[in-house]
Image 1 (cartoon, each protein chain N blue to C red):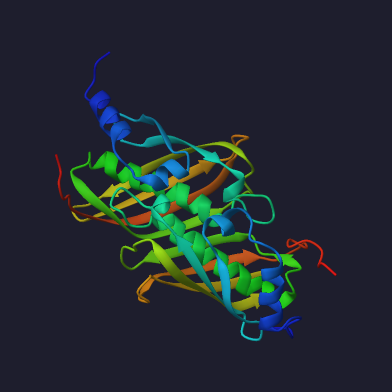
Image 2: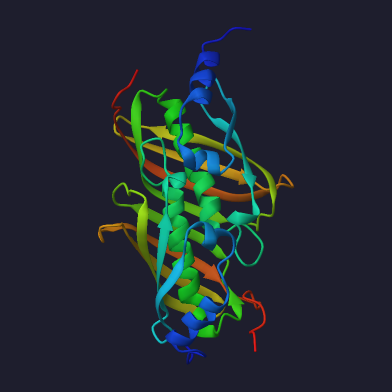
Length: 152
Length: 144
């Protein structure tokens, strides 16, 4: 990270837990497990069922990309106190093997920040803990308080 | 007019894609007779959105992913199982609520690999996201 984090990891998790997840995060059953704002790292859990599966009973790959996208986004914005959004400009996912529904763990890691552009990578672990997908992404910081004002 | 492509559209339209496609509001509109390019519609719903109030990139990716698989399955005419090895998505514009259109086609069909590309258009009709995929083709279990 090119600047000192504004929050500790525990503060970032507490901030996320004060606001119930909305939209995509709620649908994917996402919860923060660990955040390291010094390293620009986030680990989330997801709980997903058969509604995200293909006709073969495995998770449709796009939803694995959705989990990785979330972990990378939180890794990017938590060190800056959630005062920025990082819309993804580009993202690549490698699918290593088919994944059954259940509890999955995603990880996002900041690789580099150059001005407003941020480079990230991600890893996704299946319900038995095996590496199931990897990702890399390019994003751009936008100053916006996307979690809303901090409650008193 | 009766052409060989009509049964193909029916086969693709009636194909079971599983719950994920239903969740995305997937509808197959057309399969081009010559290229097997597919035209699809999706529904961008608020529960696919991020806290910014626009589609979370991963859900955009899920729609593109489904379209890429559809294009490969249509081109292979369901003779082979399709496994996605990798996708790359570019997010051009934020996507708000409404009906989305998508077009996907195979750019190269090998014996064991297929390459495809897809374009997703926002509710206003503007190009909003693009994707490419590398897929593996294998024997299809339980093929009828």
